[in-house]
Image (cartoon, rainbow, N blue to C red; front, side, top):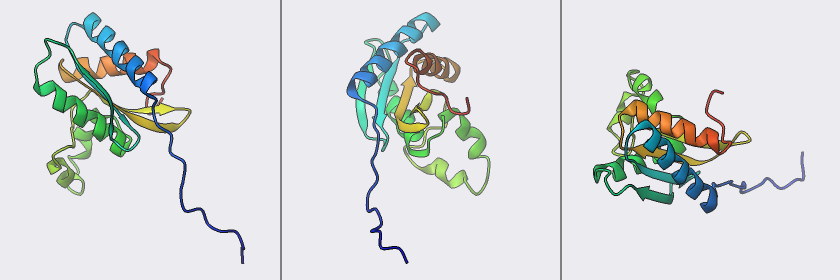
Length: 148
């Protein structure tokens, strides 16, 4: 029998405010090159907002969508574009009814050295443009993309 006391907590890593700001700037740069105006949300590892910015000419609904994409990516540690296939499974489909689950490209977990430290959500382009801007921004800052 072990006499060691079991741990009652675990350290949690979170994206820094500075890195969140750099991600937002990188997304806006990528979005401009791709040809759209974006709202960008960054959450911590628990899905709580860390930073947000919406381009002046991005539609107002993009703000909520970007936040929900970041939340979905951080919550499930999966890119949001993978949810279309997931919710096709009848055992998972009920999650599609959750008001914050966003099954549209443009949300990614933020991963550093194999640790999930937050979520990134982009809205303003079509799903492929949002997804491309997210991938470019994460790569530019040296974050890992899931499955790579």
